[in-house]
Image 1 (cartoon, helix red, strand yellow):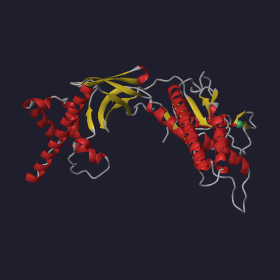
Image 2 (image 1 turned 120 degrees about the horizontal axis):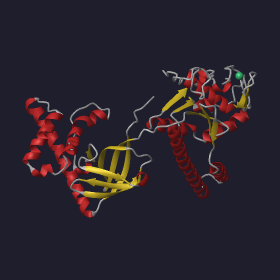
Image 3 (image 1 turned 45 degrees about the horizontal axis):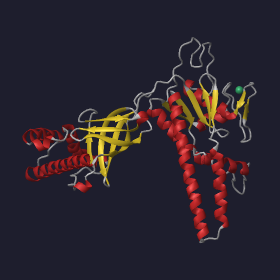
Image 4 (image 1 turned 90 degrees about the vertical axis):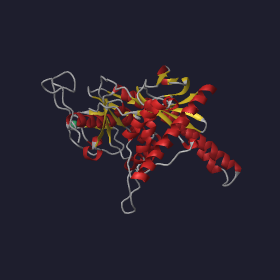
Length: 411
Ligand SMILES: [Zn+2]
């Protein structure tokens, strides 16, 4: 089980008062001067004596300087160390050949950072991480506006100055959610998602009602464009209308996918999905002249449906949120497993055509096709086979002697 949640960045815009802005700019200048001075020291040491000054050396010098000159002791010490660190690690991190960095003018100096929360700074988020207040030592409490999709433990921060605006970029470690249920979600055709759980239950997620309406509206606007004369103003106008409707649709869909994936991540410790190659799924059924394809029109309609729901985006969000919150996301190998052609009760395989929406097996097992596929995939992840082992325990995750079944090791 993955227990380490990845750190993430969350940003807020700062709204400092006039006085605070002056103080922030003074801090920015001080960091910029420190950066250039430290760079100067490294370059001249190298030129004069071919001496290489390390980050640790410069941190020691900083301590001496802070004691000797009070104006250098105004900014937070570990914040200054972060600026020194940038001299050594920035270029290498960007994937370029590490070399001497360049001197930076105040206008090109991006900002400065803080290390551990509470060391010269702190951030108190508002309710549900909407807006908040940032305290910076020597500057005071600054109003922040913005909203994090998910909060967590605050680790570090960067104060960035861009185009006359101040931004706070927080590094947070998402809280690991302890979940009770283990589910599996398989993306289906009939519903947006068909979900099978490890206790034999099932559910499904639908597209919201506005989804269909939007699709109709877009089709109407597309027709409007094609009726207008090429190069005419009316056509331009219609194209703009269509573009706006499309971007509205994309925005709403993304928002819906965010909500749905966040909920799935909250509720499920393990999510297994078919490794879908959208390209294969939506390949035209036309075939070749020698070998014409079957069900061309049905397949075309299905392709439209599939692309309309943006499955890749949804899968990506689910994978990201499940992993980020300490859950496990597993890709089931569709081609090897053939979930849609395998019986989750007896393991028998039989070809199905696109029209067969119900899985019916000679063994007597019958259920909707998407759900049967979901079970095959879940069984594979939990037990290493398309079928679940026979057990006498209460839950489906127990073996014959009632012990919890170990997860199938995933290579
Ligand atoms: Zn069967």
